[in-house]
Amino acid sequence: MGVCSRTRQARGGFTLIELLVVIAIIAILIGLLLPAIQKVRDASLRTQCQNNLKQIGLGLHNHHNSQGSFPPGCTTDAAPYGAGGGWGSSWMVYLLPYVEQQALWNAWDFKNGNSGYTNATNRALDNGTWLSIYRCPASGLPKFASSAGGVMLASYAGISGAANGLFNLPNGNPFADSRINNGSSGVAAGNGILFAGSQVKFADISDGTSNVMAVGEHGSVIVDSNGGRNNWSAGGLYGWSMGTNTNAYNGSGDNRFFNCTTIRYGINQGCGPNGAANPWTAPITLSTTGIGNDCGQNTPLNSMHANGVNALFVDGHVGFVSNDVSLATLAQMAVRDDGVALSQQY
Image (cartoon, rainbow, N blue to C red):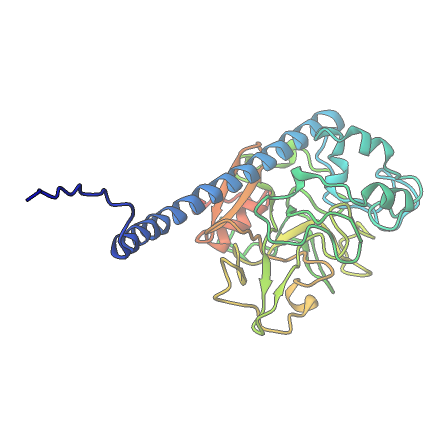
């Protein structure tokens, strides 16, 4: 009687239970890794934004060295900024030669008026031009302005100063300043660095260049109580190059000052995603709030970065200003000569 020998065959695959266990382990690992990857991505975008602001800071300093002052925050095309009047240009246009955009600057037309919006030569130059230095890579705003075709919408705003009554002076009285335009588009200050027709010099900044902001972020959206997410920033409907139609601080006329902002509200107040828990009551009225789709000169500093915004200070350093900083401290950082020591670190 013969002996039947059998060879044991090796297993060729997983059982269903083993496969499910492997899938579960992979899912857990992905769940653990995704937040870390997102944090790394957010940190990278925040760093890129800070680098943009540092380059803008170098440009501002080089402008001062060359021209004897910082550029106007926004201006009309009247001497010494141009000819022909109308809607002039923003500080970002005047900074072009100092941020490696000499060719664009050389072609820009200041002689025939309306250099910042309706000038035919400049509209042709502006259309489709992408200036990454003026755009936070994390910004949630549209890439192009809604009423200006292919004109880029910047996500940085010049700091014009602060509204009255937001902090107390050393004598105990509330801060009050005559360099304020209370017009139909909100409050516009002239006590900061970049405002309508400004020619601020280092010597004018008595509070110290490391304590005063020059540029801040407008990179998120305004959230209203109807659930609307409004793409309102200092560039309004017209993009990065838009200036103003008047440099007068008398509260009369069309006193919209584009690509600048006056501190009136806290960081990310009513802005998504960081401030969406406290939306603005709809409808948001420009003349009452200084926030709207055709100006935004009181739009809060806002960003898509978690818990705050990047801000460029006059000495060239870039700081991250937390949502938790008090409105009083924020206003102090916006005014160049209030004589008050900062009450809180940002």
